[in-house]
Length: 432
Image: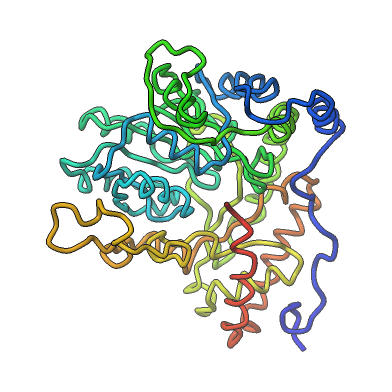
């Protein structure tokens, strides 16, 4: 019997961390208001709660306009439609992200072009973008991942130089700011998710923000079955779908947006405390600080695990051991999208992958992104944001758990297969 819980020892923590999602009497009152109003759906468009939330959400992110939609994936799809992404166009995306970043590109019969990530942030590496640009490139789709932003200064410079549009995937970035500008407000549009794990959640849902009225009108028409937008200044008429957000979902978003600043400050304070505990242990590395992030959106705390510094014990075993110490965490949080089992791409299903080519593009085998591979399969460890909504004692148990596993890491030798199985459990429930 070892000292670690995974080898028969006593777990370090036996009580759960803060539950997420959480609700208060404010959510209950808002839901009651919708229930008694009998106006439950997204039509007439928009509902009272959706309209009020969208207005405040835009303001928080220094944007002029916001529109609630049914999911974060739809938010990306509607944003792509607004900038007139057409069949055969190419959109640059990071390799290390959720599959839902890329699916909307394909669903519009456009072509995703995968670019590796910066090892200091795990976000799209701006230094590699220009090499991926072709005459067919029409947009860049950076993802603000975990607790970092993509380098928006450089991305916007490149976009302006090459006349490209920029859509920010802000599924992790609610309330975040880059040099005083809100996440999603710097590019042409920003797409947010309100799925259950997110910093603001309605179970499912999303939003698009922009400073461009024409884009907002196109988003509104696209998600409202092609109907004229609320302002209809540009008189666009397009085929759309019912991607509206219902009022029950919209109702619970307002109270959460009100709580977000206080929760974000608490998360940031607790994350800084964790970093004071993790300065020097072999096997652990922290992401590089980024002074241009002027308001943190800490969706998850991400640190690096270096197996070479701890007797070549793989990350899968480390994560499994930490989980059994009572510290929920994840290693295989994302994969390079083109390698993921949730990306079962058949080129024949997407005609743009064959147009003008002797052979169809095989997105699952044509890319090599070593930094994304390293993050996905060896290095990145993710701690859920709700772990940091408690007190300092909660954070200390996280640090103690990490240090306990590292101090007894030799006990993990030979546990790889079990660890990998434990790591994979629940992946399908994490995102949508």
